[in-house]
Image 1: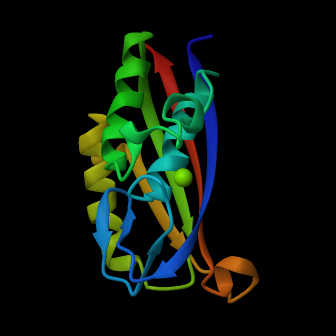
Image 2: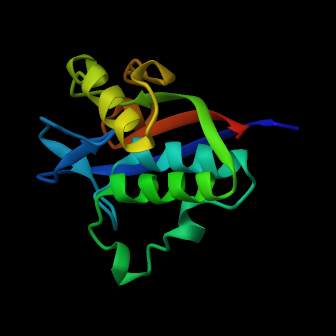
Length: 159
Ligand code: MG
């Protein structure tokens, strides 16, 4: 088979005074993700979707959060390493679609910058990368502002 699909999911808790990185872009926000890396939960879900497409484990396996090497790391570096791995196996990305669930801040102004940033890191056209944002209508941990949740899917093809 020469096409494969993968899905990824990640959650990080939010805390005041931390930087918020999503899709490789710094977001103006009073809260940021608690994390071992820079906490870019969107990139983490995307990496898991890409790794999942080829059934080669998950981000925690490739970049353990117990390793000092990845402490505070820019998640764009993790994404570029995942892309290198995918290409080394003879695959390329067709498209990816990411949904970020966060109550606030409003992410609409950052959607295009995130798409452009992720596409650049992945070496694909911007129209191959979709980023969508939603609130959860104040329901659940996302709605209470306790965390940020991201779903991603990615399609890859041989060659
Ligand atoms: Mg994560």
